[in-house]
Image (tube, rainbow, N blue to C red; front, side):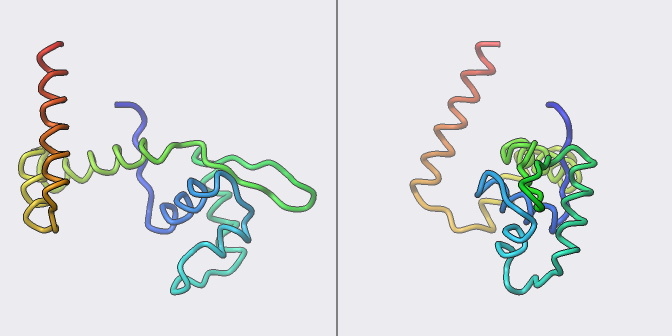
Length: 129
């Protein structure tokens, strides 16, 4: 599957800001965080520096400011975190996880049709292996 990417809540919020913008300064990231999360500039800067040490983001200097961009893709993080959730909560039982999601969510006929299409696609991939 590749490297596991587990992000805490603040890290994930920061990554969403970077994925949405492509790149951003500390101030831009701070401004994009929800109003309920009023963090100091230094807190966001420190978190970005720690994330850079872990290889999650990288920065370039633009004058006196650092401009950060993500090094990991959103789909990589989503896949890794969902797989970890399935493993921890459902002992890797994807069927149980999907049942819980379907029972606990509003599901439209369009969503069900898309899920069926994805299941058929996966069945075909497994058959072709």
